[in-house]
Image (cartoon, rainbow, N blue to C red; front, side):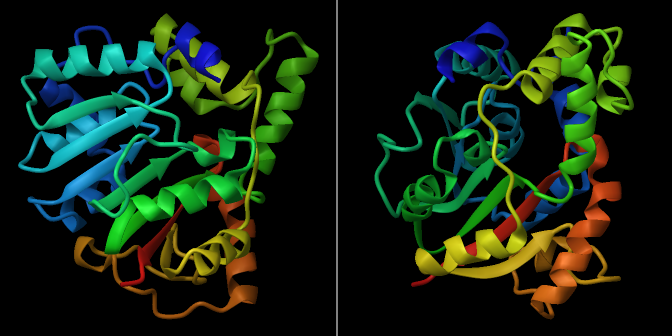
Length: 273
């Protein structure tokens, strides 16, 4: 895994990137805006599997102290250099393996792990380690490939691999990055050539939460049919309901709504005090 990301750190920065352009780009994501509103300004945050540190830098550009941790030194070097260039002083980057993290347990108000566990050999076991890094009462924000929502991407990948990557159909991210060769290649490798990938249902992740004394709060997108997106002050509060048949139907609907981003969904929980 370290070798894979060392060859093409992900996600990469745009040429001439500034802190302002990074923030503007990040804020186009509704989830990122909600996280920025929901996380207290004095929070201690861990961005576990931070890659090139874009989320770490975004959250630390306020008053928060954010630790970005990753397995790949090449990505961390790029992250630290970008933080220095942007003069973001409250971001700290450390090299560690999330399965055996060199970080004290129970020290973080918010633990983010976005798009990481599904690339580990045993995501269920790895989550147990991640959960212990949050303080009692702390929030865990987990981003994973959804078993339903990933299906359109798997069809695209089947075509791509069958044609030796010469034809990659219906991928809007690749189309948008056509004029940015480095970022185009980083997305292509991460989405179509990754050596390890797992996909998960909401019910399976809720079981991980129960095994590790983590209270399930909500998913993003909502697992309620017709449910509206939460406001920033609601993101870390329990959803109105949690009925598994409704959740399954909602996940089937995510095949359409999450297809462009590869089927990544978010599950939020709170470590029990």
